[in-house]
Picture 1 (cartoon, rainbow, N blue to C red):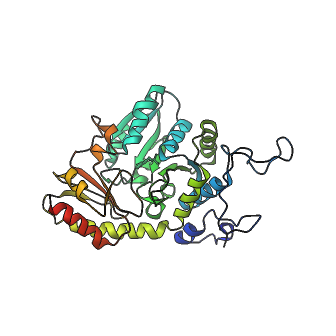
Picture 2 (picture 1 turned 90 degrees about the horizontal axis):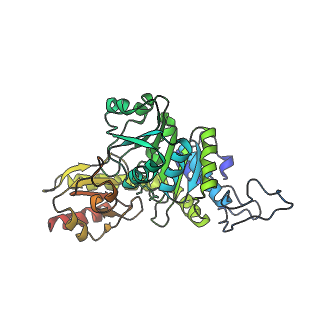
Length: 365
Ligand SMILES: Cc1ncc(COP(=O)(O)O)c(C=O)c1O
């Protein structure tokens, strides 16, 4: 089946498998080719197929992925070289110098660094607020607020924010949701009234820890054009091979997310009874779990199935200490994370091996 023949009421799993896949027009290959090219032949000056004149502007492999992401999130998608490149493009498309943005108090360190260290130099102002407190959020929104940046679940503390509640209190501001941890399997922010979704597709969407890629998906065609304009003008595009890999990952997203969630449930049940472990957090879906332990660093060096590494969302389990690894850039800010916090990305191995691994790592603590 090709994506264009999908019944309009096809369910998520069916869309995940088929989204963005049209048989190749020349050879009918079911999976589109990886168009590893920088340019496209023209029949006469200015006469080319579609918008394929130069591969920064457009590439068929990238377009197939963007179509798929748009289908799964329910909007118009644009792919970027990384999640942060996607965030940068959306903020610069939507904000002017002097504008104001509301950030969550718990968020990916790189997002904070982008706003605090780069965009403020161009006049952007920001306020950080605990978005689980909707009254506090409403109080942080100003007449000049252009974006309310939501991360849910948050990285690394896994707070869950009521997206529809934020939308109700957003006034004229755009509501942008970083959907990296939840994925469209568990949460589709545009359906909840948000204006835009961003992804580090490096994580669950790609799902195999083999590429870095980002995406913006927006509801409004006008904003989509602005984001595409920045994509072409600034040029932070992903390569065709990376687009192919993420697109392949999307086809099993629903299966992987179910397995990640089932494993996280078992891991949480184990952790909750362990001496020395406190503040176990899991949003109830996805593979992300966090907990606190005085011996956080040593535990991370003892695991054998969980690899000590940054990133998340791949089929293999990872463990990290955010304060020393992914969240160094929020040290000393309102978003600083405790030194004894451990973050797990539960993969799709056998849950019994994950629990046994944590048991030996904690037991020796
Ligand atoms: C929630 C979240 N958003 C965005 C990013 C940035 O994505 P990338 O590393 O693909 O630039 C990350 C990276 O860890 C993340 O965890």
